[in-house]
Structures are given as C-alpha cells and as structure tokens.
Length: 288
Image 1 (cartoon, rainbow, N blue to C red):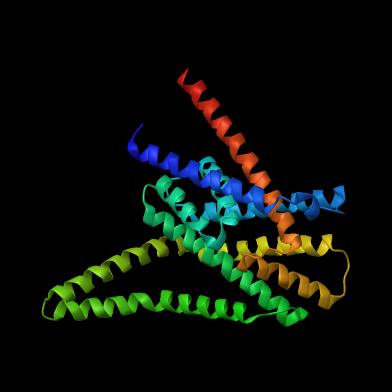
Image 2: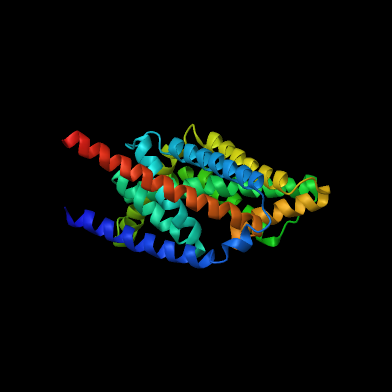
C-alpha cells in the first residue's frame, strides 16, 4: 500500500471517529427529539429523507458527469462525506468532501470546484425558497438571508464578467514591458482562468438543471415539514418553514431539522457500510 493510500485511510479514520463522537454527543437526548412522534410520522420522515438524499445524490452525480467516476463510487463517497459535512460545525466538513471527491477524481482542484459549485446551487435554491415563502406566505426573513442574496448575486456577476476582465488584463500585460511583478500577475491570471474553466466544465449545460433539482429537493423537504405538522394557519406554517430553512443554513437546527438530520445520518451510515461490505465481497469473489 502506497503512502498516499495510508494517509488517505488515516484521514478518513480520524474524521469519521470525530464525526461519530460529535454525533453521539449532539443526539445524546434522542428520546426527547422523537418524543410524541407516532410510527406514521417517523415513516413519512424516513421516506422524505430517502427521497431528498436520492435527489441530492442525483444532482451531485449530474455535476460529476464528464469526470471519471462510476455511480457506485459516487454513492459510497456521498454516503460517507455527507454525515461529516452535516455534523462537523462551521461547514468544516466540506473540506473533507472536497478531499474525498478530489482524490477519487485524481485532482483535488476538480474536487474543490465540484463541491463549491454543488454548494452554490444548494444555497441559491434555499435562499430562493426562503424569499418565496417570505414574499407569498409572510414568512420570516432576516438580514442573514439578504446577506446571502447579495453574496450569490456578486458571485454570479463575477462568473459572467471574469472572461472579459481576464482577457483584457492578459493582453495588456503581454503588451507591456516584462517585469517580475507582471509575470507573476500573468501566472496568477492563468491559474484563475484554469479554475474558471473547471467551473465552466461543470456548469455548462447543467447549471439550470442542477438549480431546479436543488429547488425540488428543498421543496420535498419542507413539504414533509408541512405534512408532519398538520394543517396550521398560513402565517404559522410560513414562519415554521422559514425558521426550518434558516436553521439549515446557520447551523442551529430546529426540532424538526434535528429529526431529519438524525434519520439522514443513520440511513447514510448504514448505506455506506452495506455498500462497503458488498464491494469487498465482490472484489474478493473476482480475485478468487
């Protein structure tokens, strides 16, 4: 086994043990979270979790289309890294996602680009849903959401104007007298352009589809919140949905989101180990 494989396995073990410890601590009062829930509610929630993660997995697999990764590998990585990104605070688990996908793709930069693009689409979708609920349902919107809206708009603006700006400065620097500083800026522009091309490869022809898949995913999730909480007054339901979505963004889960996360992590963990066992048994059978 090469040093790269040993290092990868060590990082996986450390991160997964840390995730398991944080998960056990966060959900030490699991009885309180599901107190009063009947079997029908738990079944609906489980079904929602299954459909939502199948949708998100499909979105990510579509983003990965064109790269050298098969469906089973994509599923295994998704089931492994998603609990980490949910449990570890301050979105630090996203770095593990980038690392795992980057290693599988053979290029860490590609892993970073794919995950950032996936996160961007997911964030754009959730902000859109919150704004729609706030506009049409009287839900609660905070300055936190408007900040995200400004950020998303700025990122889109940079994405569309970058090629023109990059080309202008590249031509300008090539015509100017060569100096160490200008050569360094040209090299930096070259690096930025390479990253942009990676983003373009992921987004081209798929960006709008990925966005609507994200909308569908969040629509299914908040639809289950509405069903599980019964028929409420419109204002109360809108406030609940807005609170649920905002809590999903700021890392402070509501009671309903805690239920969703617990079932999600349990389902993904079991799925990962089942797939891992099947893969090992299959490989053993092949080698035999």
